[in-house]
Amino acid sequence: MTITKEMINDAVVNCLRSIYDPEIPVNIYDLGLVYDIAIDDEYNVRVLMTMTAPDCPESEYLFMEVKQMIGYINEVKSVDVQLTFDPPWSTDRMSDDAKVELGLM
Image 1 (tube, one colour):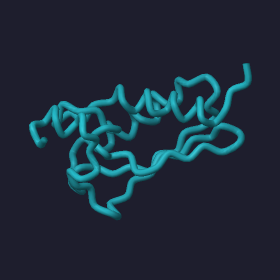
Image 2 (cartoon, one colour; image 1 turned 90 degrees about the vertical axis):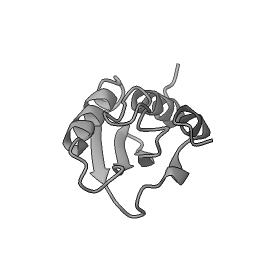
Image 3 (spheres, one colour; image 1 turned 90 degrees about the horizontal axis):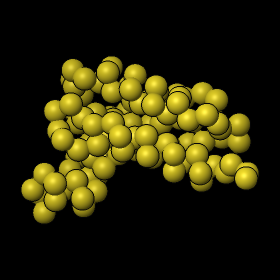
Image 4 (cartoon, helix red, strand yellow; image 1 turned 60 degrees about the horizontal axis):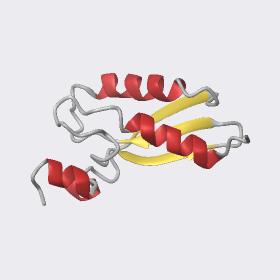
């Protein structure tokens, strides 16, 4: 079976859905903290993400966990996690499931 970028992307999303914000009981993917996932032809992965607030004390922990969890995917050669606050995070980025879980819908 040939591994495709789409398969790697699905595996990355599954990893991200297993990582929870320590202060909010929702995974970082459905919380809307992940802005972009880029995978090149050699399966190097770049994740562009944000935090709920610029002064989030858990940012370093989350970065390390994202890098480590994605790194466990056998086909992934490298993981680069980048932080941005442009645009700033808002609840509009959350999935409907996350909004329901937090009582926002």
